[in-house]
Structure formats: C-alpha cells, structure tokens
Length: 372
Image (tube, rainbow, N blue to C red; front, side, top):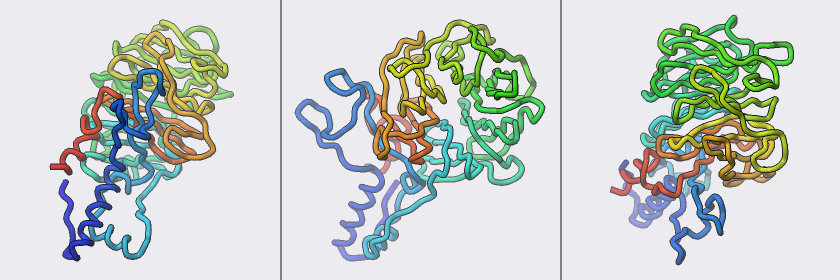
C-alpha cells in the first residue's frame, strides 16, 4: 500500500503523512531494557513468561480501511474525527487469511473487515441469500463462509467474497439454531440446535456441506455424559475431536468426529477453570481450547484434555484493551492470533502470540507492504 499526498505545502505533507501512519498502525513500541515494549499488555503478566500480547482493537471500518491524505488533511483543518461503519450487535467471528467476518444480529448481515486489502463490505444484504438473524459463523479452508441464521433456521453458505452459494436445513430441521462449524476437509458440517425450555432437541446435527444431506445427530436434553442443556457452540480440535459448549450444564463436552462421547471438563463456579456463562469456543493448531465466558468477561485457555492453562481479560464497566462487559465470539486464525468479540463495547480485540512478530502472518502483510 502506498500513501499519496496532495500538492499542499511541505509542512502539511509531513503532518498528513505522520497522521496516516499513526491511524493505520497505532503507536510505535518503545523498547525497554528487558526487550519488552513499554506499556504493552502481555498475558499472563509478569513474573510468568508471557504467551500473548494485546495487538489492536477494531471498532469500525475506519480501523481497517486506509485513510486518504485528502481526508486526513481536511480533518486536520476542520477538527472533525474520522468515522466508519461500526458494529451494532456483534455476535460471532471467523477469520480467513486476514479477512475478518463478524455476524451482526441487529443489522442482519455479516460485516467483513479485510485487513490485508484494507477494505470493508457486507454479506447477506440482498436476495438470494438475505440474512435475518445471523448468529454463529465459520469458514472452511477455501474461505467459504457458513452462517447459522436463527430466524431462517438454516445455514446459508457464501464464497469468500460474499456470493451466495446454497442453503442447508430449514424450519423443520432446527428448533433454535445457534452455531455452526465445518471440518478442515469440508466433509462435515456440525450445527448446534440449542433447543429451549419447551424442546427436547438439545443436540448437534451433522450435514454434508457440499449437498446439505443430513447425516446423523448426537446428544439429547439432560445432564448425563453426552447429554446437553442449552448447548451454545461447537469447535473442532486438532485431531478432529469436537468441543461442545454445554451452557446450561456449565461444561465443555468432548466427542469424536462421529459424536461418540469422550470426556467433559468444567463446572459451575467462580474460580478460574470454572464456568459461569460460557458462550463460544475455539481451538488452535496445537489443539488448545479457548472458551469465552460472558459472566467472567474473559476467555480461558485449556489444553486438549481440559486442563486450565491461563485466562485473558476481565469484566469492566469501562472499555479498554482486555476489558469486557458482554463478550461473545472467539476465533483463532492460521497464525495463532486470537480475535475476541464484545457485544456491549461493540468491538473486536486481537491478541498475538509472543512467538509471532507483529509484521508476520496475514495481519502483518499490509504493514510490511506500506513500509516498502
């Protein structure tokens, strides 16, 4: 990406250039003697060895779409602030090669923040493929988007650029649709039916994503192993195991790819490792499991066997990095970056593993291009 400046005076060109760099990439890190950047948030905090650092927050398209020199100069003169389309009621998030998809249940479409290309667009505004109440979303390895629509009671499928492809399910297939996850080979689509007080269908329904054929179900209402009480979300682990957030039973249950019960972890409580209001779940390349908890205002990280490793964030009545009031969606991308959605503050916080440099990965590409 190259920044172009208007034919103003030399001083104006310097001021605008500095403003563009600041708006695009944030403040520069000031290195301290121990190699850590001054003021940078890391998790876990010292004296433990840090594993993640807070990287940036996305509130609106203005945080992704590069600013033009003319607009920056105009605001410098008028004093107006920069604006862009924001999030009304974000719910779930999925990421493919730096392209960030966020379902917005209030505005009834999926908002797309394409960081590498510096663009913003919407999916599901028009027929065919108009969305009504998008909730859970996922992407396959080709970037195709799968959207669980609670009002349509169906999964709507789009390509990476938002072109509508097909619909899976329908009103007779689900009671209360909540979430969707597709495996790495795009051979199975796992859909969570949360059920409800008047329904016994608290279950996961499995489909062939290519043709929409229903394959099998697993789970039923209850509290015994393999049973669910208001399941919320599902994620697929490194070895193909399924992690299901069993919200009403305050646990995460683990199944194999065919829905056979393996184990569970978590219980209701106030300590780390417990759950209060678990919502969404994600996994990384090492098989670790990330669980968002709306009551704790954080996400907890477990190893594949359910042992607590650490947590990030906390409940706060004041917005800020790692501060949350009503978190919901969580996703871990190909590079290990964590994307965490808060509905109350209408934002996406992004965390980078300490093993990954800021200029590396799909979110680092635009920064490198601009520096050349």
